[in-house]
Length: 206
Image (cartoon, rainbow, N blue to C red; front, side, top):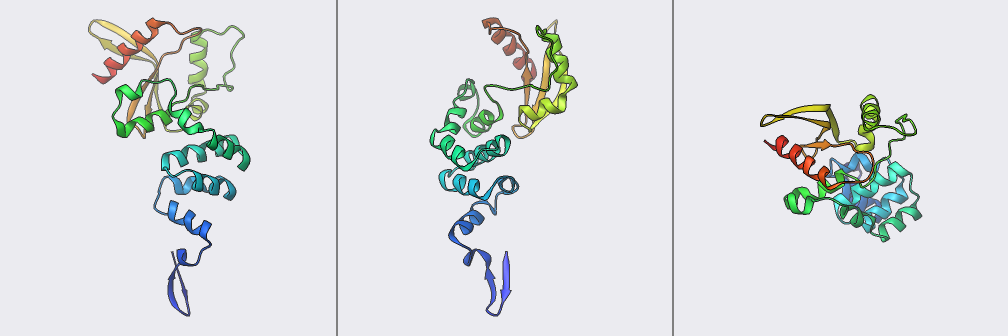
């Protein structure tokens, strides 16, 4: 950005206040973060800019601030509590299965908990009822999942050897360029679920 005056052309970042100048330099070349910073307040942007030096960390706090309406004080508390670092340490096997350059992005793509308030479920809903509610409200479902997901289908059919298998929900994550298989279960986790999911993932890889 240039300004024309009596002294000729002067770069804008030469006369901006320090905080504004740092903000401009931090985000002017970031096609991804530049649009996001416009969606939260200036005071929150300054906190994130000064306390977060990594673009992925900044993206995390910008997205969370936008989504949950954090005030400057609340945002500062979350940063000082290392919420981003704790979020990355959620229960996944990404550390063992993904290359270094994709590990952090993958961890940011999933959450420990999801809230599907839009689903109109009966008091003792079944797995099938949950699936149908997610499919019938697919737009709200994808927004809750995080925004970078595309819906491919439900009960997605694959053939493994002589067996027919059906994935409850199959998504595609655009940024990671990866398929995401979702197996819906009601109740406590059981070890056999992991084996079933591994079968799905192997079939998708092939």
